[in-house]
Every structure is written in structure tokens, then in C-alpha cells.
Length: 318
Image (cartoon, rainbow, N blue to C red):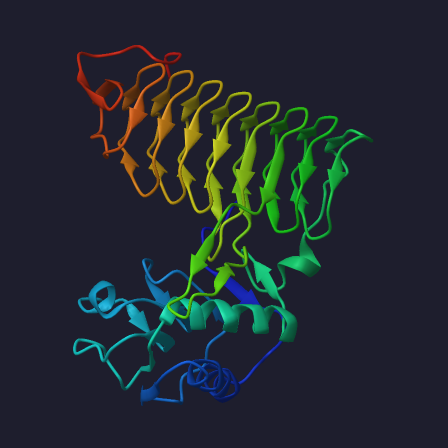
């Protein structure tokens, strides 16, 4: 059901030159702006520079981008020339504060063209199935897709840009696709808030518990796979990825951009910091505070969590 494309897409066509001129205008207010490479690229949206990117607007530091060969036909806002970049197929905009400039450009583009999450035309094509059961006390915003047989319970809020598969259950008072806390203090001192443009994708047969919050992604979707159980009063941070068959018990917290691999089991009250990877079939014991990535099949417990003998933290998965 789900197409795992990365990024958001312009709702309306806009020229690369117009975007580059806006970058120059914004960057020049507080520092330098140098354009190198090709201005002949054609971009159709935005993406996270940590992902492979083609035909996108993105940002990143020289250090994070210097060894990348999987970015092409893109406009990259960065802080220094990148020696390994193919400047015949990319345009680099060198500025003093790439993140700050990128945020301001995103805000301008949101007003100028708007964005489709998931795929081009999503906002026009997204539908709620006639076979879905939606409580009259649930709130379903525009630009939402809900598959056949899914149940949306009373008090649930499904925000724009959310894609829910078939046979899912979203329990009472869950919120899917709200903004997370993503503020940035620019070098100039101003406080900026990243727009959330990535949306949420939830695969078939997944259940999200009562009072749980799943934040929308910023540049790429927050993803929950198929046959996942997310218990009551949990929090899933922006851009996190929860793969198929994960079992996550009540009161657990998953930080932004963390990946929970297939069939990982998360016991009650576990806290997992951002930007980690929890391996396939790993087990995290009750109340653990996880500050480092966990290997596949490993068990951890404690604060901070440490490797333990095999734990049984969830139901047996077939």
C-alpha cells in the first residue's frame, strides 16, 4: 500500500532559478552567498540530505556531504565547497548558516507553491475509504488517506499529510501527524521553527494506542510499518521509522529519526533517544533509557541501558 519515497513535492511548478534567487536574497541579508555548479538542474521538491536525493532542494554541512555520491540534479544549501560533489549535475549555494537559510526558504515555498507529502498529487488523490469506520467524534483533516477496514476511534485527530493503510486501528485520543518540537537558534540569534512537511505513513494491520502521539516528519515521513503494535500513551518522534512487526508497550518514547527494525520488542516505559538504530528482533527491558544503538537480537535493560541475557519483552512473533 505504501510507497516509501523520500521527501515532499511542490504542488505547483516553480523554476530552479526563482528558488536560487530567493536563496541569494535570504542569505545575503546576514552574510555571504556564492553559487557554484549547474543552474540547469530541475527540482521537484525537498528532501533530507541524509537520504539519497535526486531532483530535490536540501541542506547540509560540508562535513556531512563531502563523501556523498548519491545526490544528483539537486540544489544544495551548504557552508563550503564540496570537493567530491559532481557540480555538473548539482548546484551548491554556499552560505554562512545553511539550516537557517533552508528554513526561511521552506517557509517561503510553503506559501508560494505548497507541498504534497508522499507523492506528487497526494493532496488531490488522498481518500478515506467508504469501508473505514470513523467515529463522529474523531477529527480527520483534509489531505488524509485511510484504507478499507481501518477504525478511527473517538477523539482521535488525523492531521493533513497522513496515510493510513487498511485494517488499522487508531485508538481514542491518539494524534497522528502533529508538529514536533523542532526549533533552531540561528547564528544571528533568531529562533526558527522547522516546518513539518513530511507527513506520516502507517502500514496495513497496525494499531496505535489511546493517547499516543505520532509526530509528522519534517522533510521525510514518519513511518510505521505493517502489523505494528504501538501501545497507549506512547510518543513517536518526527522522522522515526518503525518497521514491520514491532511491538511497543505502553508509555514508551521513541526519539526523532530513530529506526526500530523488524520485530523489535519495546517493553513498558522505555525511552529511546533520537537518531539511534534498534536492530531486528532486539528486546528493550521495562523502563530502560536507551542512549546507544542496539544490535539485532540483543537485549538491553537499565538506565543507561546495558546488554543483558535474552529478555522476553513482547509476544512471540510468527
